[in-house]
Amino acid sequence: MKKINLKRITWMVIFIVGYSSCDKNDVPEPDYATEVNSITDEIYNTKTTGTTIEAIYLGRYVTLLEIENGKYLYDGDVVLDRNDFSLPGEESNRGVYGGGNWPNRNVRWKYASGISQDLKNKWTSAMSTWSSQLNFTFTQISSSSGDYILVEQNTSGSAYSTSIGRRGGQQIISVDPRYYGSGNVVHEIGHAVGLIHEQKRPDRDNYIIVNYFNIKPNWTSQYDKCSSCSSNGSFDYNSIMLYGSRASSSVVYDTSIPAMTKKDGSIWNSQRSYLSTGDKAAINAKY
Image (tube, rainbow, N blue to C red; front, side, top):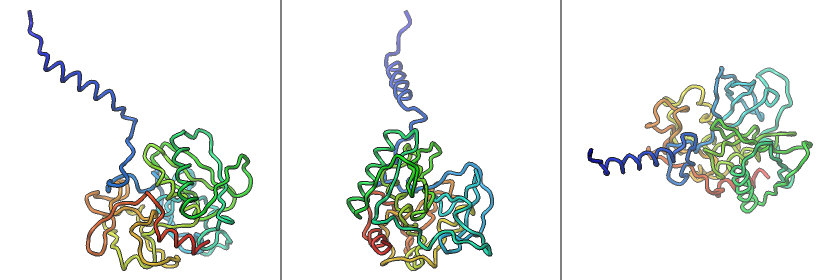
């Protein structure tokens, strides 16, 4: 009789069970507190990209990336329609500086169809953060009238907003909940109520170095300084609107080299747990 190798069979069983329990489609949610080189920084994952154009958005000159479906990408995670901006020399009254405010900090919103319970939970948690820390109220509506945020779910690994500040009419916050947590939703609400990325502060060069040599051309605009933007206090490394030092492979050539560093060369993590003192000051100054 042939001798059975029980040890070998045991290891085969362990391997099969372990492999079958890891569905390739199940992407674990990142650890926001410790992960530096991860997808936690909010981006719109473009499938096809066109050329960059110079435009005027919210009263200032910006660089936009033309993306699929007639959309234009600003700042990495703000997706604009052609009606949201004007071209140099084109007469327009689109937008106002800093984006519109939500009257009395009351944000009207509704769910799009097909929203998972996972995303609903994250949206609820994000609303609670803004309510408890900055006295915003969120009113769920059933109609599609007036100004409101439509909460959408995507499957492209994206997290984005379609406006900085209140746009007028419908604006969208879209999130892939497989990759992004409630803190990322807090970040996108930040855009929707008027905040831009902290790394774009007009005084940022006094605090950080942007390694443009390592950033792919189509993504440099999300790191460009906004000289005409308003800012409060000093550079805030704890801002929920600040990207981490490292960026995903879609943004940089070499992920081992940070996209941004402090002046002394050190790096920082994204913070997606709370609204910082600087975030609160910026909102209170705006509203």
